[in-house]
Amino acid sequence: MHNQRIDYHVHPNYSIDASPATIEDYCRKALALELTEICFCTHVELDPERKEKFVILNGQKWSVYNLDWLDNYFTEIWQAQEELKNSVLKIKAGVEIGYCPGVENYIERIVNDYPFDFVLGAIHCLDHISISSQKESPYYFRSRSTETVREEYFTVLMEAVKTGFFDCIAHIDLYRRYGSQFLGPKAFTLHRGVIEPILAEMSRRGMGVEINTSSRRRGLKEFHPTKEILELAVKSGVEVFTVGSDAHSLEHLGSGIEEALTLLKEMSASNYVFSQRKPIPYPIASNSLFY
Ligand SMILES: [Zn+2]
Ligand SMILES: [Zn+2]
Image 1 (cartoon, protein in one colour):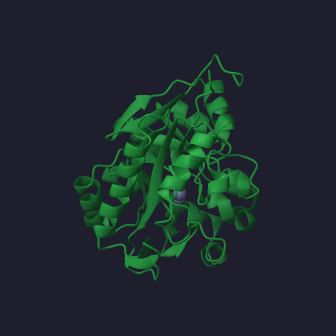
Image 2 (cartoon, rainbow, N blue to C red):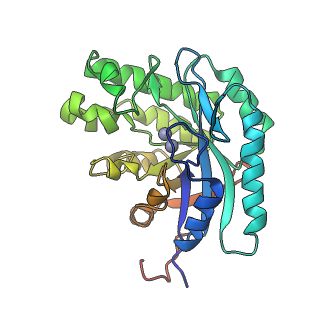
Image 3 (cartoon, rainbow, N blue to C red):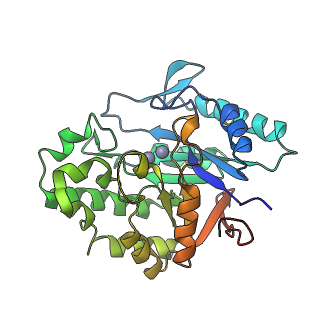
């Protein structure tokens, strides 16, 4: 019996920040790694005030607003599903949408008009500056007090949750990725007192929290989010948790997933997969070597 392993946050070559690895390349690699389920979550960033509003389609820059690129994305996923239908691997169509105030109409169209299995929401930009980019994030953090960061991040996060567009929130404490060096130890306590009502709202809506393992590859000790925040989520009644590597290249597919699943198990929390936007509990195998 193989250990059940899944990866619910994978970026194929449709994003400008991803490697040229295709959907099919990732599926082949997933099979080699004996993953049982993979969900592609390509980036959609719609802030009109930012320079980079492109996706990559057939190796060329393509305006993210011209949604024809999504037809290709789905076709490619469906082809991979067809090709591998007799394998153990399930392939899901997801998306990671960067929320910023003012682009609700676009997001609504995207999530309503396309048959996604899973819609991740994320806060990548504050004040039109990317806090998830190593190069750009200092421009945000350098000129703001800890209190301002806290106020801005969690205000936008609450707005994102209340739009109701998302099944799950990706890397809910993303400000730690590059903010730690500016915020100091406060980066680890920034959430206290302000994340609780957000988690309660998520719980009320049945929204999930993602464990994102990419923090490890960037030198952080804990996953996104920290164990403290995960415990608060469980305490707030959040039931849905997903695990994802946030792989932007083949080498990162599946990385840290087993440990993330173990962490969920330790907290008596459940891992979920999604089909047509519906969460399905995906029990962590107990009869494998790893658990
Ligand atoms: Zn992200
Ligand atoms: Zn991502």
